[in-house]
Length: 184
Image 1: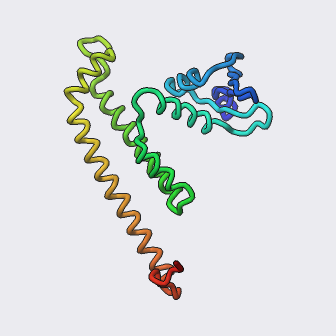
Image 2: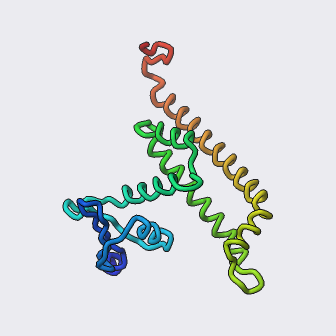
């Protein structure tokens, strides 16, 4: 069973000359091709051809960087700055999990929404133009739904922080520590 999974997953090797080699098609590919694998929901792993180190996340981050550099970026500078501030912070692990769950929730909402519309109009699949027209009408409603979701998510995150703070005070309350006595 696991050998079926392994043979189904695509292996891409990255060579020192920065070229990517798809072992399934026995050909060199570009980041654009890797992006298409992502869009097609293909499972793949990128490894360094020499050391066999896992590089999949690095390649995905390169694709995001290219996407952010071209056209309309998804993240504002302020959002990226906030994400960077969480690296090395005690909340880093929780923030990563929080972001992942929120992206998954958004994806689930999107699938439910597109599933309800069945992707057709009078028996024809939605074209990009039809989706634009549809979203122009439905956009405000979707924005309202997303704003409500974000508000609920923010409230949940604040509750989690308050709960962790309370637990920390209970755990360390017996120690002779006064936050006002911090060294300057």
